[in-house]
Amino acid sequence: MASSGNEGRVVVDLGSAAESVAADEEAHATPLHEIESLCMRCGENGITRLLLTLIPHFREVVLMAFECPHCGERNNEIQFAGQLQPKGCCYSLEVPLGQSEMLNRQVVKSDSATIKIPELDFEIPPEAQRGTLSTVEGIIMRAVDELQALQDERKKVDPQKAEAIDQFLLKLRSLGSGEAAFTFILDDPAGNSFIENPHAPLLDPLLSVRFYERTREQQAALGFLAEPPKEQPGEAVLPASAVESNSDGLQSVPHGSVGAVAGRRAIAQGNPDEVAAALCRYSAPEEVDTLPSTCGACGTECVTRFFATKIPYFREVIVMATTCDMCGYRNSELKPGGEIPAKGKKITLRVQNAQDLTRDVIKSDSASVKVPELELELSCGTLGGMVTTVEGLIVKICEALERIHGFQLGDSTLEWKKKKWDDFKERLSKLLSLQEAWTLIIDDGLAASFVAPATDSLEDDSQLTIEEYQRSWEQNEELGLNDMDTSSADAAYNTTNT
Image (cartoon, rainbow, N blue to C red; front, side, top):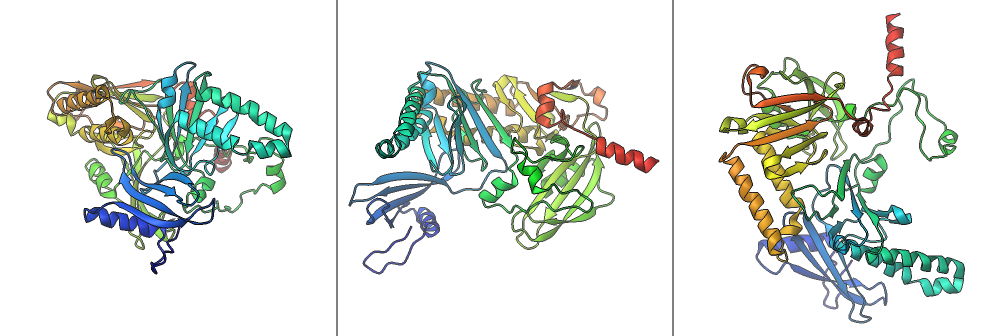
C-alpha cells in the first residue's frame, strides 16, 4: 500500500504505518492511522485505516479497513503483529445437527490457516480468505458468497460446472444454517488461529486441539529458515521416479529408518539460566561437550553445548544450550536419555503447604495436567514442555487460559460468563494461598515428567504417588511407537559383535 497525496507526502508502507501507530499509542494520541491505497475495483485511490491493538488476553493484531469513496468498495482484514508460535495447531470442532449455537463460536483465522469440512470434501486454502475474526457461520457463508459471485459467468461458459456448483452451494448453506451435522477443522502451521471454547477452563467434548511440528515446506512458507536435508555418506538416495511412482504421494524410506516421534522430542525448552538453575542442584556437570550447530533465528554457524546428568528418581537427561554470538539468540533444551520407557507414568501430588509449591516440576510435551479442585484439565501438547515449580506451573497454565480464551473477558461478555471466570480466579487464589489442600495430577505416556520428592527417599513422601501403566494402542500410535523399527540398528549391532 502506498500514499500518493497531492501535498508531496512520502510513501508509507505497512511496516512504517504500524510503527507510527505504536508511537502514537505511546504518546497517548489516537492510535488510528490512515493511508491512501489503490482500489482494486475502480483503480482510484481509497483510504485504508490501520489499528495496532491487543485482543485482551490473546495476541497483538493489526486491524485494517479499506473504503473507496469512488465506487463504494469496502473490505477489512486482520493480521497478527506478534510472533509465530513454536508449533502449529489444528482445531477440530464437531457441530451436531440442530445446535445452531455452535455456529456462533468465535473463530480467529490467520493468513496461513486452512479450513476443511471433510463431509463435503471442501477446503478453504489460506489465500482464499485472509486473516479474519469471525464465527463458524460467518466463515461458511463468506465462502458461499465468494462461490456465488461468479456463477453468472460460469453459466455462460460452462453450464454443467455451474449446475454442479449450485448443488454444492445448497449443501454448504445447509451447514451454515445448522440443518446438517459436520466437522469444522482449522489447521494453522503458524499456531495463531483459534476456536472459542465456551466451557473453558473445562475441556469441550466437541472441540479438540492438536499441536504439531512444522514441516520444512511449512517453515519455508512462513518465512522460517528451512535447509534441505543433507545427504550423509553411505546413505542411499531414492531416484525421483521412485517418489513419483508412489500412489499415495508419499516419499518412501528405507526399511529400518522409521523411528519413534517421541524419541526425537525435547522434554522441555526454555531460558538457559532457568534450566541450569533448576537442574544443577541435582548434579553439576563434570564435563561439557560442544558440537557445531546453526542458529534457528539468523542461520549463522554457532555452538551447542551439552552434558548428560542423572536426576534422582527420574532418569538420565541431556541438557543442551545454544547461544548465537551474531544475533544474541539463546535457547535451552532438555532431551531424554536412554531408551523409551515401556510404560507411561501418572504422578499425583497432594499440595498442603508452602514447601509443596516450591517443588521442582519437569512437564514434558506429552503430559496432560489436571487439578480436580479447579475442574481444570489440559490436554497433551498444551504449553509444550517446561522446567518450573508447582506454583509456576499453575500460574503459567492460568495465564495461558486467560490469553487464549480472552473472548470470555471482553466488553460484550455475558454476565454469567464473567462470573464464571471470576469464580475460577477466586478458587485459584485460594489454592495458591493454601487456604485448602488440592491435588496436582500429571499424566505422561512417555514417563518424561517429574515432580521432586520432599524427602531423600521417595517412599517416605506420603503426598507424592507415582503409578505406572500400560500405554494404549492409540497413545503408541500418536507417539510413533507402533511403527518403530530397529532392524537396522540391530543388524549393525550384530555385525559389530561378530
